[in-house]
Length: 347
Image (cartoon, rainbow, N blue to C red; front, side):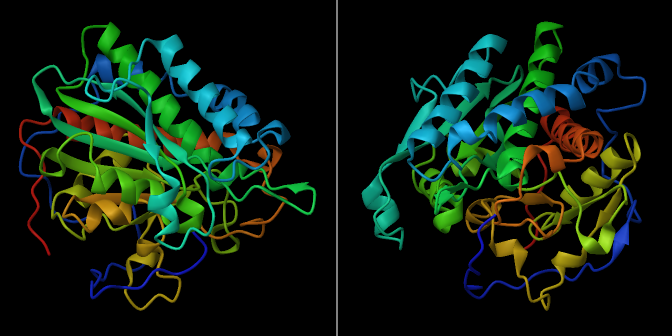
């Protein structure tokens, strides 16, 4: 997650403090994810702690050198991710012709990136069966802060945890597709670069979208979901940020998905516009929200190893990472398969 605060640019956030496991009210249509949905549950069960752990021990290994933007280690991590998608039979978007979307150094450096080299977003895509033109984006950044004074900052939580979660969610959707129950809407698995330096990869994507932003239904952004913070130590929880900023339906959908799955404690502390951390503006979902795309940001809090060399894979709570990943999948499943796209009815 980006460390430096981003200016508010006049946006006001919806007040929704505290924690909850469900909201009052219900969605305006029947859920596409009933407890008896065998296709959903078969796919859901493919999200497993041991595979998340296996992938994270690679993504966040010393071999990747801390995955600084455009570095050889980041490129090596990207190659591992692409090979994973190839092994699943998940292709890049046809119009892109590659898993890579180049993010030029010039673009980043004009926005305060210093002397960053060229880098790449990585995109994998499952086409929808009924509404392929409508796009559900599931995003995470795969860069971190690199190596400093010979010490590798592995970024296992930030954002190795989100990276492997997106990979595992992609596998779950692909398993459903192989069983003849693929998503009705298309799913874009978007791994962005340059987040730590200034949300550059998501800025580039939303400035040069592979799919029209007008057709983008939602961005579910995952940035740090493998640990806990002091305030929630030992709890089964996740922070959800921004889910009612632009749509009256997204928060309800997410809470219904949560109730029907692991029933985590959903913490809305950072939806408070007065909160000094201003986390709504500090990860990649923000560039989608600026373009009127509903977003939900899943986050575990600022822990003692945030942006420090101790953010290593052995400190990840893998069972909790599994549950949080399953929640994002369940939310995405509902949004991808419901009859109508979610509304954008807030500003």
